[in-house]
Length: 490
Image 1: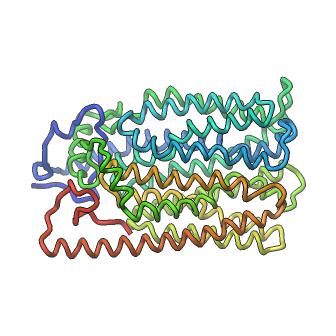
Image 2: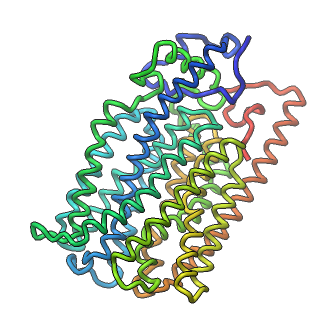
Image 3: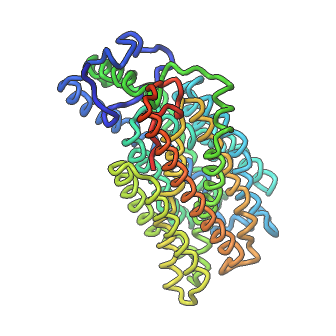
């Protein structure tokens, strides 16, 4: 027998046809050759150049269409809709109430319905909602568009993350996820530039914020046919693979069955396993604290910049651009190193520490320049923990439907932060927003504790598995992550 170890194993999601069974039944029958290594490099390159830009654009537009309310708030939005009190904060938060309901469901449905169908339908619907938001007249209509936006956008984050775990090996998918999710950071920079460009348009009796929604919705709609015709439900369906590359993916599917088995069928017992695992709850609580920082910065970044004392809306919008740029650069670097060294804990702690230091500066420093530096420092850890926490759970939960349930639950609890955050940054606390900053500081410290608990818990379980192997335990993939040979990532 000759086949690669885990560093070569890539999962393939065979939903319509189990190609892996047409080749061989067991890893003992797989012969891996030098030619397969060459095919691997070319096939993965083709897959990367398809998935990363496509998912990145979807992620960017979903983030932009969700968070552009922050830029709209600086361009006559409140006055045009007659918002009073904390109605703006409520509208900011309500989108996440639908996220928390639907994300766990979408995570489980992905393998059953298929990625192509779910993501195409999602983008069609949220694009239409964003275009419609350009024509709303009052608070009630604003709330309705935000609720519907949450229903349809809730597909994106969990489904893309789960799809990557079905497609790439464990030491590759964080790099891809960070490259994709970095587009969220670029969406913040792009949103600030777009808001600046559209701010002074008053054509067709529409103010700049209405043009912003209209243009962004139309941009999102442009990706719909690309998703339908380009996105493969599994790697072997990629249109530009050679027959030999498709066969190579089938081999990899077999070699990776310890971590993802395309033959898995939905069973309620897998859902129960997810909820019996204490790590599911620690990851979920961790994600809530992490997302408090994420949503406070992404939603209120323009408002926080305006609160620094700059006099014009344009200054506040443009000041967000370099912040998001440094956030994206730091995020991608951390993702590459995390995969290279197969470590999650140190990078999560780095991100959370940046959040902590940045917010401490924001609430203590009197100087405008120093507080702006605080926003920069906080942004360096903005995306790292939220991506790594979910993928760390994906690393260490198997089989597929236990993993999907766990990851969906983590995102579900995390997005409760989005529903809460609009109420802890009320407009009455401007310009310094001390109440919201203290809230985020407390939950960042909590997340640092949860991350540390997960690290030591997984390390302990690995030690127990080593003892089982030494005692002669069998390598049984049907046990999922309870298999002694299924080692947890630290």
